[in-house]
Image (cartoon, rainbow, N blue to C red):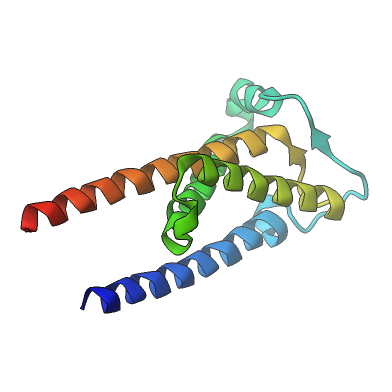
Length: 156
């Protein structure tokens, strides 16, 4: 029974991870709401850490609450599922360092694709916040796993 349950959890996790990646790709590369279909024909990038974060904080009243929240917290929240689900579908990547490094690599890949295809902006702030989101997701996974183990021990 436990083996069937584990297989079901793994299958559902893989499906949810695939759906997550599809939604993430849509919002990062195709969503008109976030101006992703507009190509200026020039490379846009930010290589100064916290430059855009400071700008969004400073001009939050002009940018509006949605723009502020999406930029500051959206990048973190968007990558938390990556850090949480990755160790479920890939047991070899259950160490927090692995989760964090893979979050960084995945974010860097996305930022480079945005730079190459001139969609969005290559931004080191996004890279930092996305990696932080993956780290937070990994911490949530580790915490949830410990809680589940303690609950299972209590049943015995």
